[in-house]
Every structure is written in C-alpha cells, then in structure tokens.
Length: 404
Image (cartoon, rainbow, N blue to C red):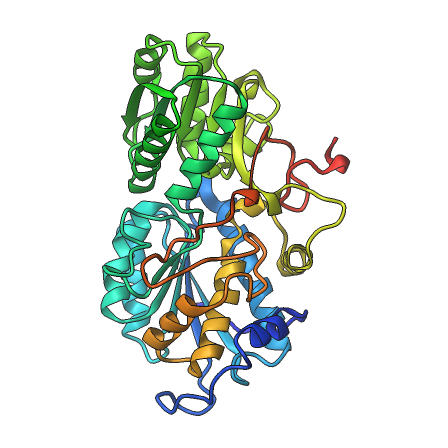
C-alpha cells in the first residue's frame, strides 16, 4: 500500500470548521488521535487515463495538505491512501476489499474513475458503511434509499439535462440525435436529456449506443445522420470520444456537436496531435460542457486559486480541472467528519455530509453541493455550466489568454 500524509496550507479548513459550527465533541467510537483515513482509487496504470488519474490524485493531495496544515480534522490528520485500480472493476473491488480488511480501515472512499467502477465498488463500500464520493454516477449512486453513504460529485443527470436543453434552445434548433458509450452514466444522461428536451419542445430524431470495446462507430453515426438532426449530442469518455469524432469526420457530416463533461475531460479531446485531436478538423464543430471553475477568469474565486496552487505544488495539473473532483471530495469528507465529531464512523460522517449547508464548505469545482435526505446528487446551479470549444489547457483551465 502507498499511504500519503501531507501538510501544506490555506484557509479551507477554517471555512470548513466555520461551516460546520466548529464540529461536535470527538466521538468516543474511535481511538484518540485516529486519523481520517481516505482511500482514493484511480486508473494510474491505464495509459489513456493516466493524466486524469494524476490530476485527481494531485487535487486530493492539495486538499489534504490544506486541511492538515490548518489543524486537520478534530485535531487529527487526514491520511490519504492512493491505489491503482487500472480502470478495472475487478481490481477496484480487490483494492477496496484489501483496505477494508486491513488494520487501517478507511472511513471514506474517493472513486475517481468511470461509472462501471462506481457500480462495482458501491455494494462493498455500502456494506461496510463507509462514505463513498464518486467521480462518475450510476443510476442509483445518488439515491440514499439504496446507498445511504454514497454521494455523487459530478453534476446530476437532471442538472445535465437542463444544461443541454438550455444550450440547444440558445442555438435555436428544434431537433437532435444522441450517440453514447454504453455505460450506466451515459445511458442515464440520455434518458434525462431526452425527457427534458422533448418536454421543452425539441424532437429526438434517433439515439444509438456502442460498447466500450467498439473501435468504429460509423454504422451508428450513419443511422443517426439519416434522421437529419440539427444537433448531434454525444456522451463518451476517453478513447470512445475520439471514435465518435473520427466517425463524424469519416462520414463528412457537417453537424454541430455537443459533448458532455466526460467528453471535455477526455485526453483525446484536450491533447494536440499526435496523441489527441485538439485544434484539428475533427473538433471543428464541437462544443462540450465544462464547469465555470474550469474556464479561466482573471479574478478567480479563492477556492479555485487554492486548488490550482496546491495541485501545482503537488506535482502539476496534466488534465482539465473538470476531473479534479477529488479536491471537493476531501473538503466535503473533512467537513462531514468535523460536524459528526468522528474520524472513524463512516455512517455518522455520511449523515453529516448530507446535512452540510450548501455553499458552506469552500469547494472549488462546484461552489455548492446540495445534498438532501432524498438525493445525494450534486445538483449544481445552472450558472455552474458553460458549453465551450476545447482549448489548450493552462493550469487545468480552458480559455486562458496565455495559451494562444
């Protein structure tokens, strides 16, 4: 196992403590001085996702160092254990089971990979009553009735649906088609966008899906081209994003493309040739959903400034901040533990996270997380979204003038 205990500094822990009313008296359920143990699973050895994994790890380290330097949680340090799950559901479950059966059982799991990994680890984390903070959702991961200790960090499918409908209405289009990678999250996105946009008066002309192992999606795209949509929406992560862009180009299909946050988080989209397609004809018609925190501003919110400086100190930011949810995960976990008065009781920490006031903990990727007894989805405000053309990244952000 690789265990990382770090200490840096900033004002996040002060804001966390204030937001939680300073926390309760320390719970006697855990030994005195027991750290808040966080297990982070990342696809470190998966070549296509290595930069994303590094970005998530450095984001978590930045938050850990901020909080530890300012006194930790209930006067105890956060202990971060980083494990490579190699983009394999089986490996992820094995690594989690090993951690849970060891002498230093984590109270919190941060899962930084795609939705198949979330689906694989949630039953085990739920059985052991530890907090699970998820990079990618499944149909049930934000449902506290099924997974009371699970919280989604990425935007809920309802929030994504609303954002896509608003974007298409701003483009004055009336019809759209959807192609997506066949994953739980992409399928949930498809259902939500279809439902909301049809209710708003738009027409879905067709929908297609393809397996993660599919290398050529031209047949599915050709079927959608025949339906003549005004916009093609696509949901994919990693290499499959590139397969969609290649297929559209191969067909000579001149259609506006709208991708989700997974698309703009894909290295093939944000990297220049030969590794990627940035600034090529493949992306000429592409806009993808980003978060306001990932688009450069001259006057950044303080949590974003803290995130960027902490990540640079931890080793760099090789991927978009779109995938840096681990910073917010650590801040939320620390705030929950502080409010619950325990670093070891995952169930109490989860209950405290659910009750945190929106905008209380000073998170960076989203300025506010709204959890409730009926929903553990992130549910960010519509102002947290932007549809942008991919650009060269500077400090994990798009649109920085120094990139040109």
